[in-house]
Image (cartoon, rainbow over all chains, first blue to last red; front, top):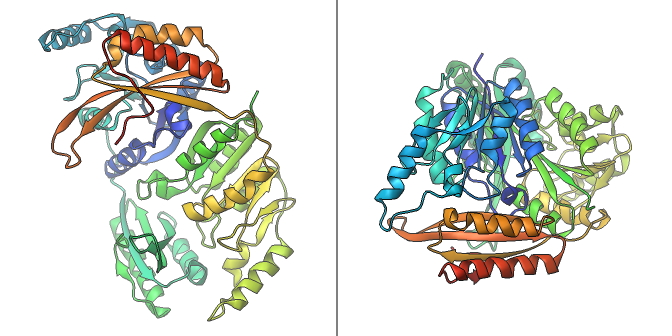
Amino acid sequence: MNPTACLLIIGNEVLSGRTRDANLQFLATRLGEMGIPLREVRVIPDVVETIVGTVNEVRKKFDHVFTTGGIGPTHDDITSECVAQAFGVPWVVHEETRALMAADYARRDPPVEMNAARLRMATLPLGAVPIRCAMTTAPGFSMENVHVMAGVPRIMQSMFDALAPSLQGGVPVVSRAVHAIGVFEGNIAEGLAAIQQRYPALDIGSYPFYRQHSSGAGFLGGGVALVSKGVSLSDVEAATAEITALLVGMGASPVQGEPGA
Amino acid sequence: MNPTACLLIIGNEVLSGRTRDANLQFLATRLGEMGIPLREVRVIPDVVETIVGTVNEVRKKFDHVFTTGGIGPTHDDITSECVAQAFGVPWVVHEETRALMAADYARRDPPVEMNAARLRMATLPLGAVPIRCAMTTAPGFSMENVHVMAGVPRIMQSMFDALAPSLQGGVPVVSRAVHAIGVFEGNIAEGLAAIQQRYPALDIGSYPFYRQHSSGAGFLGGGVALVSKGVSLSDVEAATAEITALLVGMGASPVQGEPGA
């Protein structure tokens, strides 16, 4: 069995609609390739009880928990101290991190002050292992199976690149897609369900799509994308061949891969 | 107190990274305007036990639960029967819906067959109230405080437009943003925390931004957007004035509103 992952997106700005999350899709894709499939995502607010309670619930339920958001220097950045509280450990200045950040700030022109707000970014749950990345000396960290990263996508991605080699992956999840124009889901549902039953270890998904003129003015027609996914490449390929035959049998002209934009 | 909302995004395609969700931001914005703030979002897979368990957990915890995805005709569309199971009611053909769909299919050229797969879209938890929208005769539905909608954004939006007038709203959440170029979060954190303490009923958020040339090649510089949000417009405006004064006091040139792209 592959290890499982859960993602916590922490931040009022996503829940209010101000910010459109850009981290879910990146992490889902990368973790899938590593054989650590994402099984659940939660978006939660910057509220202490909610963060502490959610971290404690999901860290027992999943092999890995990834968090994004809430590790900056301002009052609404409370993820780090909440993780300390969840694990029941003190939240303390990490001396090596403080020194790295202070040296970085001193090198800037003009120099940046290591004030109380910035010192919070060098303060970690006792026992946490910093995640050092190329983008900033203010680190993410791993506390047991909970991996805490920034919310800003390019910093999060840099932190994940630094973290990834230390994660024990599983069997990569592979997928193959077939699409066909002018096919209605309602006409293929029965045949598709029969294929899914013959490959119970695969996830076979059916995703209708709609194409519009790039002007947005007109409708070019739609179709369906059929995706087979699993850890066995031979099963995925066999199911894909059966799906292709199903579509051909209905007079469609299926194409391997996802429909173009 | 405003009523609260939770969103369940149901679908393997979002968890795998294949599809980037486009419904969260729409619903977060619309619900905020109606005074029904979104307090949590979960993305869960097309797995019966997970859907049933999650629906039963969150429908007790929040005033409203909205779901997107999993109400089409294929084998992986299981949201509707899972909601019936969660409420402990039978999942039965809704006769009025069946008749509407059959009439719609008969009018098409060529006519569309009302087969077993399509009949599933007319099958609802006993006691559910259909959500009829302009885009399709296959409905969403409300079962008590759980509102089940399609995953395809334009259909979901049409269903939400149909549903919204029946929801009892609260006091709309208002927000004001100020942004300033060249300001580091670490320099304003202390002053900002003091303002937050003076307005405990508001959510004051600090969001750093980075601007790149549209070519992606270079870096134009960054800054911070400071957002005050709450149900009291006068508090929001007072906090915004204090934040503006804080930035001016640091030599910055704050601008009302969000930074441009």
